[in-house]
Length: 272
Image 1 (tube, rainbow, N blue to C red):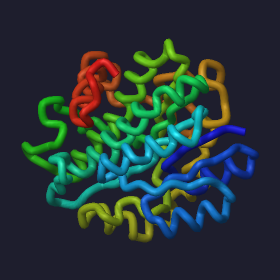
Image 2: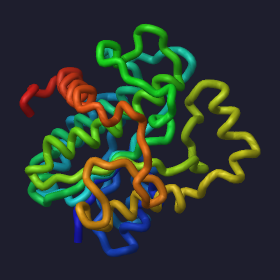
Image 3: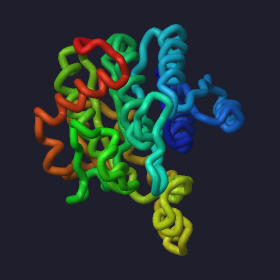
Image 4: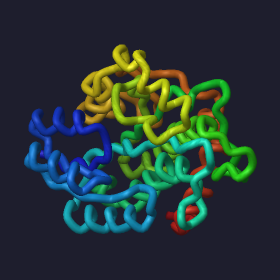
């Protein structure tokens, strides 16, 4: 049995639970989270990743209850609207939810992951590999020229940079990491986004989008196979195969700089 604290597609939780793994489900909505937990017969925790205080409380709860974590699946994600939404401590919402909150949770759970020689799996997107994706270390919150899609692409590129830097920094502790693209999934993603994204995700194209089952397949595969044998730590995947990230994902200075700035933004000591 494996402790698997996760914030991700409920189908992946169902697949893991039905395979005999111990699942710990994390969600934002108390009612929906409780319903899924009851269905699966698993533990559940509630946290809103728009608030770093919630993330810290979640990490404390998980650390107190689970002495080891075999797999942490970071799947919280959104795209904000046309106008920049700034959180209560000054961060742009998309960057906060898609990168800073998972970064903070993962870092706070380092000891539990290291105890299990665990894996961190982060949901990225092909948007982060797009030619127009990019990260400006001196303006991570996009105070200069905010654009919803630009912010989303940057956050998804950040997921891959985080994955690579985690593999470099924590590999000696036995912790592995992978990022993956689930494909265009028929989910609730985009409903809070700008008009163009909302129109696209509710258009007839929705009928040909991937099912949640197919979208979760690579996540389930990464969670149930062996890093170093079936997949390589620090890599980016799609459809169970290595995928090509944005060229800047291979920039070690950018990856290290993002990690250090993320520590500062989440008020972690720089040598954590």
